[in-house]
Length: 285
Image (tube, rainbow, N blue to C red; front, side, top):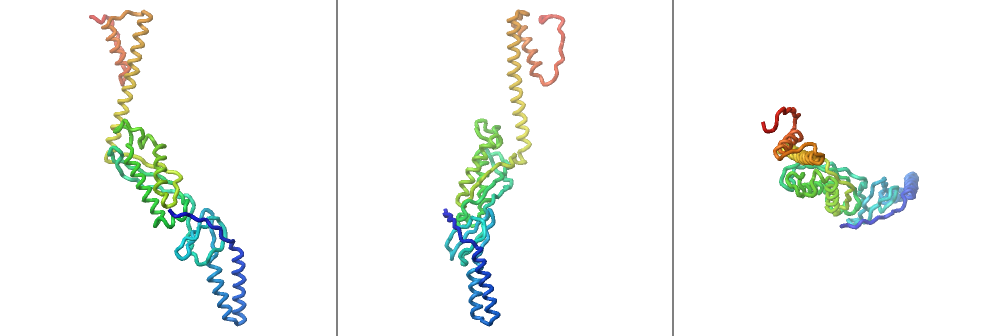
């Protein structure tokens, strides 16, 4: 990785004053018919003085190279004068916002899903950004897509297919975002780029299985709800039998207990209202 070298060139205001003085002298020589001196002063002014003046705006940098050799980077904003023969490359230090496109990939258990991420990044090492990769903007786009694909292949969409999974794409959003940010920083370090934030912006099953998976999720939710209802109903029946026995309200034999348990479970576990029936006889007639 290229090492960034920060330089602080002299102020450009004194050089600007010198440029104006030389310009006035050039005009003076031209007026008083001293063409040789006018040409020399003009060459000095427009070849050595003026091309060295640079303006660096806030959150920008200028990367300087001299005959193919890296000279340094000017990161301080202001008006400066540098070697006029250096090539000057402007680099923005502002934060970039990458809204990744939706990718169709398979999760850890093979289900096709759609996933996209939003990534906030900025350049930290200008030398690496310019010299280590051909085009750092394209590099960020391609590596970000690769990282998101790898993340989607690593974890299942949810726990329906893999009940033992500790992290899922849908349920572990915070953990997934941390892992994505870490992987992106590792991938983009070569280009001198730091990822400030990475979040999953879109996550869904692919259209061809979305309806089927929705039905499966609904069935799973119904089964879980029924399991909870049955557990609660059994507890309530047990409590009712214990209370009747403790307070000696009525003495129930095994057949009466079985009938009571059956009736209570029907009432408590049914998914619609129950119409009571008044028994005027006995259980045995």
